[in-house]
Image: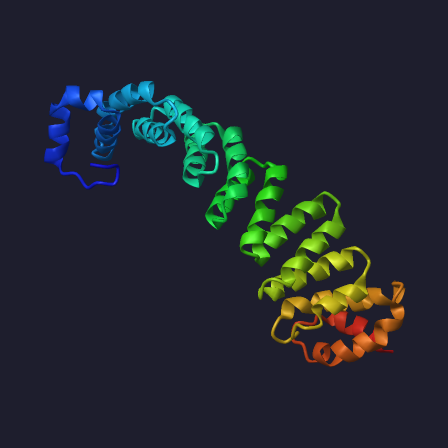
Length: 278
């Protein structure tokens, strides 16, 4: 028999009947404990794992499986203890660390779970791990861990949602250049350009750079994406007072016809546009 063997219930009972033999052979002892745990006979499995680990305290898998058995009984303290030992013995094992992080949440050890998730995303390329880390950091309103989680998510699966969320954190902190850099970088790595361009235009306008806002919005069709219309009009209106005011005629030629035919252009914006053209 080995740890990957498919064992019938009768074979398991035979192993249990040979109690003295099983307890005198560490391989049989570990296998029997594993089979008991798989059969949801957790208390019996725990008793055998305790004996086995007295003989083989450095068996990471045995600590892991013993921790899972305790977890199955909702006995969180020893579960965390043994999963922690398993992780310490095999720190590169993604499964051990992932289950430990999830277990710490069940045990109410949220800050410890954050640390484990932060370490997990350094050794795992699975976006689910970063997403769980992000969700936990968000639920705890932990800005620093949110930054780390979102940055990792952008590495693994670039997208407008994660980029906007991370950019908004930096924007709220007053770091507009970093917010703009995040959105710009993501724009180059995803096809979700519309929400990214709209958000970038907002930021550039807030930074008193209407010409850059207009450049960002230039690829968008105003008839197809009417949410861009007020951004364009606002940037055009601000451009005469901006350092690059000389670019206004060119931008009017670019945007003027589309704005004039836009059904989303409020009356006051029509007046603003007319004044600019004059």
